[in-house]
Amino acid sequence: MRIFATSFIACVLGMVMLFVAPPSGPAFAQSATAYCAGGAGHQSAVATPAALVPIVAKAFEIDADLAQSSTYVRCDGRRLMACAVGANLDCGKADTRRSLPGATAFCRDNPGSSDIPMVATGHATIYDWHCVGRRAVAGKIMTPVDRHGFIAANWKAVE
Image (tube, rainbow, N blue to C red; front, side, top):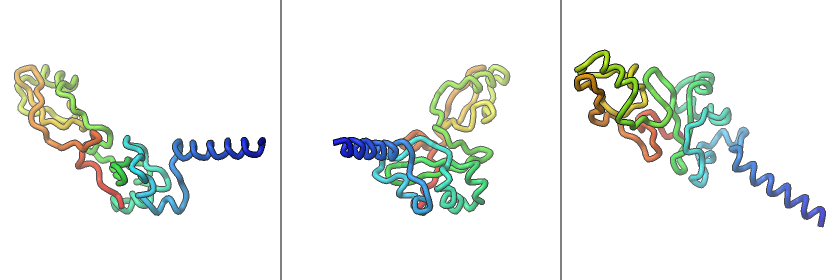
């Protein structure tokens, strides 16, 4: 009975580890699909795990050091999605708020401005912003958001 209990505990701990930490190693590094197997992978952006750096670097045509320091991955169903941070690229969730403190402050200082710069709105906003008097107004949607709330254009599927 004691051997059965020990084996059962080891089995349960092994199963828990599968959910806590994604598999790693050379075989895992070869497959983007393995990371998102079953469609239950990470839906939030996480720093690219070391095992996925080679395929993400290849997808963006950048070196591995840059991929390790400036890319993120997440799953969209069974597809691995990757984002490389850039000067104007945001890999976090899209900002869909129609009221932004930075835009409001900009309009107080620049009433009637036809454009509010991203330094005031942030790079994650999806709207075209302008000032009506001293009030910031969110205009039309400038960039689509995917079903998980990320700016779709900033993410690419990695095979």
